[in-house]
Image 1 (cartoon, helix red, strand yellow):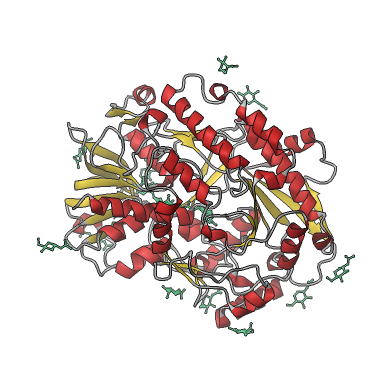
Image 2: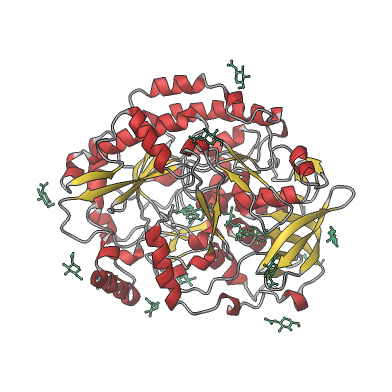
Length: 623
Ligand SMILES: Cc1cc2nc3c(=O)[nH]c(=O)nc-3n(C[C@H](O)[C@H](O)[C@H](O)COP(=O)(O)OP(=O)(O)OC[C@H]3O[C@@H](n4cnc5c(N)ncnc54)[C@H](O)[C@@H]3O)c2cc1C
Ligand SMILES: *[C@@H]1O[C@H](CO)[C@@H](O)[C@H](O)[C@H]1NC(C)=O
Ligand SMILES: *[C@@H]1O[C@H](CO)[C@@H](O)[C@H](O)[C@H]1NC(C)=O
Ligand SMILES: *[C@@H]1O[C@H](CO)[C@@H](O)[C@H](O)[C@H]1NC(C)=O
Ligand SMILES: *[C@@H]1O[C@H](CO)[C@@H](O)[C@H](O)[C@H]1NC(C)=O
Ligand SMILES: *[C@@H]1O[C@H](CO)[C@@H](O)[C@H](O)[C@H]1NC(C)=O
Ligand SMILES: *[C@@H]1O[C@H](CO)[C@@H](O)[C@H](O)[C@H]1NC(C)=O
Ligand SMILES: *[C@@H]1O[C@H](CO)[C@@H](O)[C@H](O)[C@H]1NC(C)=O
Ligand SMILES: *[C@@H]1O[C@H](CO)[C@@H](O)[C@H](O)[C@H]1NC(C)=O
Ligand SMILES: *[C@@H]1O[C@H](CO)[C@@H](O)[C@H](O)[C@H]1NC(C)=O
Ligand SMILES: *[C@@H]1O[C@H](CO)[C@@H](O)[C@H](O)[C@H]1NC(C)=O
Ligand SMILES: *[C@@H]1O[C@H](CO)[C@@H](O)[C@H](O)[C@H]1NC(C)=O
């Protein structure tokens, strides 16, 4: 979660103007100058030094006999304040913006899609919200043909990746019973910091009181498999210094220049994976962004794809692994016809509603933008003392309501009935491979169970006390696709979110807006004088609300996933339960693209857990 807006862009501009350090000069000995120091072969080549790629590279190089090269498009960040201080905007140079194709469900508007293009990937630029999904989310993954990938199988990997620090006494006193300090669901000695901002705006008390009065309970422990209710989330930060904890801090910096068997090549775009005649991945071709020179490097054991949910399917397709018809139309020799590559793509459509507060008389998050002297004071307090509102992630925060369908509307049975009757063939493209449709049907059944469950959320409402209140459909029924349109590896692929292709996503959105309004109308929120300015009270019938959503929603909650799904092959899958790409040898995918279905929540903690588990699976293959 990060609420990208024009304010964000503006502040990026300001931030950039006082950040002078060059990312190229970061003094990490294992960042290679590839013209001179690159070996011609490594045991493993990891494509993408983002969140998942760094986890796997770190774990594999724990064995000094194993050599690993990570090839990353971006550079090592310069640890500018904007990347370490939660309340400052991240420098724009680390953010890549893609644009979707027109979305029929959004009146043919396009949507932006942001990713991190930097060592550490999404975790350097993200909103730092750090919470797991519900047990049922992962149990559904297991049911799609993946023994060991359910909640029980993943829990030890969630723990392995984090060091959790309980909330301060001040925070607990401010929110009695709202935030559990129980260590048991958590890891206590993993690389990623998981903690709480040590400051909170007082109006957040009204958030919880408001939800409680409209039938949504406070959940003090959302990380134990029930990510539901109104809760106060952990963030990916180090408690001690209230700084962002990135994959780079956690899995790269501690070993940079220390492990000789770990090499990181920055500023290079992987263009293609090479296969031998026996369809074994034997190496990759990459292009330097500085010289445009193409080089090649060999993998003696495996190639590991970790370029994220947009670029991993793109690289597979460019390399001849994907839907045969698509590859042939571009003159790419088909190594293996794998119809699922790029399919099953998912993100969470979001509408940013706007509110004003007639009775706000104390500091609010909007003062950061409206009251320059106050904002400067807060930055000073942070710099001197590591306290105050700058410890809260920029345009983000910790207080959310995760709503199961039963919590959203009493007429949930009719939504479930409509959903069950939906003709899935009419939603997917007409010439889709039968395996994709079969997989969609299998997912649909599992989704219906999750929509009927009181323990699994379908919508998220986040509030940090400011004017903007995002509402996200976190468990979409709709499916999109990633497809290359050219053989140029620099050219972004076509991004189709499929937003609102399935009618249930719209029905749930409309019902969720009504529930959000119920919360706003609660005495606790009315004590603040809260009133809706967008879409506004005059937008009230279902048809009016639907029109507003189609006119204003965006396709992405910055959580793209599932485009190289870990699903049975006959259900359109791309990788098996050992994350090996079907039909070839020596090639795995370890990033958010293998999630069989979206996690109903934010992705980063699950990406860490998946990559930790994938690393263990790879290590088992050595025995
Ligand atoms: C703006 C934003 C806000 C977010 N907010 C949150 C949040 O609050 N909470 C949360 O949990 N999640 C959040 N996320 C999502 C989360 O950060 C990502 O899901 C996660 O980091 C993805 O991990 P990954 O390993 O799949 O991909 P990434 O971390 O994106 O890593 C992929 C890497 O591959 C590199 N790469 C791509 N193509 C190539 C190529 N051809 N050659 C070489 N390298 C390549 C990229 O530069 C990138 O570094 C947010 C994401 C964004 C972008
Ligand atoms: C990289 O190596 C080349 C050739 O050895 C050299 O000319 C160049 O200056 C080096 N660049 C850096 C940044 O070290
Ligand atoms: C590395 O290789 C050496 C020599 O073959 C062997 O003795 C050692 O056990 C290996 N170490 C690991 C961690 O596999
Ligand atoms: C969207 O574009 C398609 C194809 O151009 C067109 O058929 C359709 O009518 C458009 N829909 C809207 C709402 O404009
Ligand atoms: C914060 O603390 C962590 C853990 O000790 C450390 O790795 C990181 O560099 C620190 N960050 C800053 C900005 O001080
Ligand atoms: C990959 O294939 C290209 C031709 O497409 C060739 O030039 C290159 O040497 C190959 N690299 C490896 C590692 O086999
Ligand atoms: C690399 O090639 C692109 C066109 O493909 C060009 O726009 C760019 O300027 C080139 N960069 C360098 C450093 O040569
Ligand atoms: C701005 O903040 C200062 C404290 O720095 C406060 O005294 C003042 O009242 C605030 N102004 C407004 C308009 O809220
Ligand atoms: C950046 O952080 C350092 C250390 O906390 C601080 O001294 C400096 O003032 C900060 N810069 C800005 C612009 O806040
Ligand atoms: C500095 O931090 C301490 C606790 O860590 C806190 O009690 C104090 O109020 C803070 N000072 C300011 C100016 O916020
Ligand atoms: C479902 O949709 C497909 C494709 O649009 C259509 O051919 C089929 O007749 C529909 N089935 C039913 C039962 O309506
Ligand atoms: C405005 O807020 C104050 C302090 O929270 C409260 O006492 C008062 O009743 C509120 N006024 C209205 C009209 O709700």
